[in-house]
Image 1 (cartoon, helix red, strand yellow):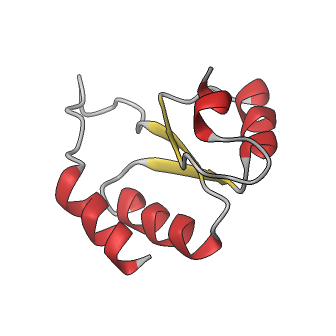
Image 2 (cartoon, rainbow, N blue to C red; image 1 turned 90 degrees about the vertical axis):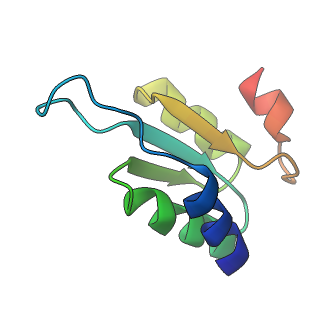
Length: 88
């Protein structure tokens, strides 16, 4: 998780806002591993993204049905539904 969080900090840059009053970018983070999702969530939140975590594909689908997200970051290998199936 530490490596994943460090990698996220190194490779994700802040999306420029169109105005000082713009809403934060809403990110749905999907991962079945609690340690990984916790580390990535901290890294993204530290860059002023608004992060919601879903622990698995089915929970992610529920979240996407009820809320709007600007970005979905998903694990590929999850037991209930892989990331490709989720994003299809």
